[in-house]
Length: 407
Image (cartoon, rainbow, N blue to C red):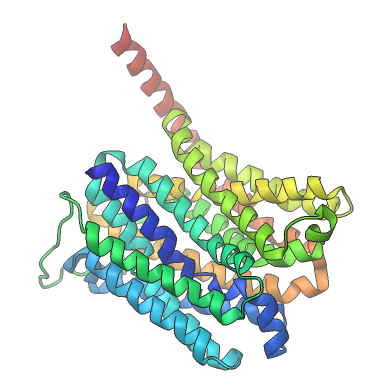
């Protein structure tokens, strides 16, 4: 039942997080109908990010995530997200009217993504690492899913495409309500002084391992969500649908972003052989190379550009579950919750800055906007370096232990 339940949760996560970029799938229509530019679409994405930051921080600091069952929070969040997303599709008439709805969607996502992680651990704690790779992979595929809906419903109004994500969120709520929490889940009773605190969160930064994971994660977050927001813009700037003679902007965007799901799953498998730090470093290096070379290849054959974009989509998120694994391994049990809450809060705050900056500047720089993302993976590699150094003796000891047990 355990692996079956994890599979159901993974599918529910896929459907639930389709709310995240549902507005971006309708970007071309919104630019035309609302007479706005790419920067305005970036503001809609930033509103979701801000809502997610506020939501995760509220869940962490109030202790609500520990006082109620994860499945219950997920179901309420998915239902609320479906309603907020529908409100955006049916009631928003311009950018100002859309911002509160997108912020509300972000709030609800705080009860979908983290609670999905908690439920997976509740069902299969002994396989948390590989399951986490699958879960983040589904987050990635769910992020790409609205672009697939736009492709399938190319002749439909943009509102219908956005509403498709609301329908998927309702299905997510039904799936999680059916499967429930695992046998290893626990609900803590509230007690005086039992809430999480920023003091413990900042204490975690004194730990070398956590600090390395967090700094690597911060660099990764500078690039990740800005890249996802820019994928349709880059596809359009490179004129890939015309030059490839197949597909459209939404369809190619789905393939590029969705490639990250394979990266997360493969990274989870490789982490058992070479360690999480090496997997994260490899992914950061790969995405840094893509940032550096894409503007130089803008006149290259379309197949080569598409290959670079697909590899970038795969590498840009493959490190994400590994940073979570490294941070959890470095922290004492009584600091994990508050430390990860602060790390997530800072990371998503960084995405707001990078999305706003790059979507504003892309009109001036064109494909050269990729260079603006390059500092993220470079700084991430610099921050992650201590974890790579520490991992060398750990892996050597593990191999020695395995060889001894086999002899």
